[in-house]
Amino acid sequence: MFEEITNAVVETTASCNLNCRHCGSNCVKNTKANELTAKEWLLVFDQLRGLGLKQLTLSGGETTIKDDFPQLLDGLQEKNIGFALITNGLTMTDNLAKRLKDAGARTLGVSVDGNSAIHNYIRGNNRSWLMALNAIATAKAAGLRVAAITTVSRLNYAILPELAKLLHKVGASGWQVQLVSPIGRAKDNSELAIDEKIFREICLALIKLRNIYQSCLDIRAADCFGYDCTLLRGPGWPGCTAGKQTIGIDACGNVLPCLSLMDERFILGNIRQKTLKEIWRQDNGIMRLFRDDKICQAAGICKNCQKYSWCQGGCKSMALAHFDKFGQAPFCCIRSLFN
Image (tube, rainbow, N blue to C red; front, side, top):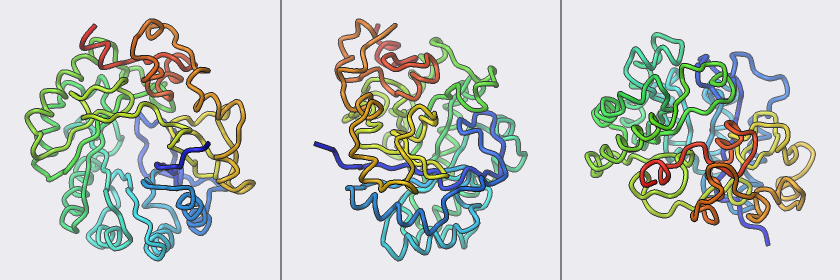
């Protein structure tokens, strides 16, 4: 019995107009020669909808600089496919915000990684902070729901209260906080890395900020914080859904259990060679690794945890990045706060 695909995150292009120090995808300015066209993506979206899709997220790279992005929006609007889009904000204009709204954008996620000095340093662009804040204001004025996305690292964890105040001031509706992961360019930037002490401080700061802003800013810790902790993200965390209800597709059509697992070992197939239904419903070693909880055994710091049968070691991408195997969470809010 195969579950429906409820959540798909797609890398519409690997091309980007920034060169961020923490980029897990190691995106560059030039577009890959064999990236999917807007026409091909729209066919993929049709297949996803046929497999039960509830949430589509357009990611990158920077989706808005894709050559045929206008055609992609036209197709999404014609097919009445709602979507979320993640952007660094550099290209946002009044016209683009209106076009996104008309095309069916449900949420615009804007990356904001600190105050001007920290954000611009991480992003490698002295205009990027102001452009990100402008994108939030512009999108909000167009009637879009806007959420900020922060990759928290050693460089910015201490200013989370300052950042919460800023995001509330500029009108963000939500704020997702995710941990820097040692993949892509972040792997070579040791100044970003956090340790257990810093992680605990991050957790405590977010708990406090969620209480302060509970009526006006929806603050949520991402899956990489480990086992369900209602203090950090609210109730109902289902555990890692990679390969179970979640799917990722990279810019060249490679299908992955999760877009954060950009590793050749976990490519399930390519949508130019097989239908998405064929790829999703295959029963092989890779799929069983994500779908059969008995295969992924607890290891290391998670080995004797009573929560493991539910958590399965948390975010598989984080486990792989830190330990090159699954079965243990490098960081866990429950372990950090209550053990």
